[in-house]
Picture 1 (tube, rainbow, N blue to C red):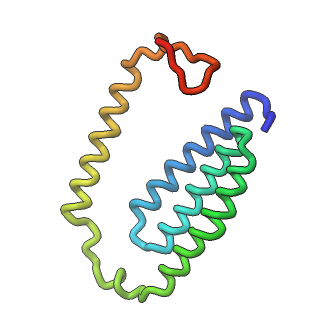
Picture 2 (cartoon, rainbow, N blue to C red):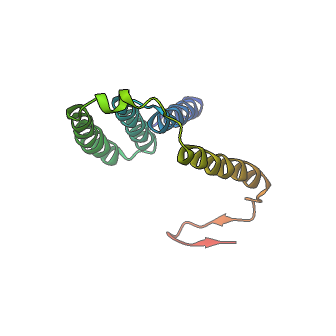
Length: 134
């Protein structure tokens, strides 16, 4: 889309924020229906990014194929499964969840400390495809 700079940046930040919240919803919500709806939200935000990058065909294909078909199929499959299995088990936090959370937090903090310390100014981008000159 040909949007003015500030509006484009606001939409990108909003989409990124909603994408992160939706991704956390997919992983952290214990109800599988809510997780499937969060996955749909993530896929819609990815489609918004494609729209903002002027890839209209990819954005529409993302909406039709992934949100319109795959996510609906996941929701129907989860709804056909007996829902009482999840309500019986009250121990939602396991050792595997703790280990996975520890690994994810370690990766996030290592990226947060590495990315600002990296010198990105030595990279020159050329106009030819697939070629980066330092």
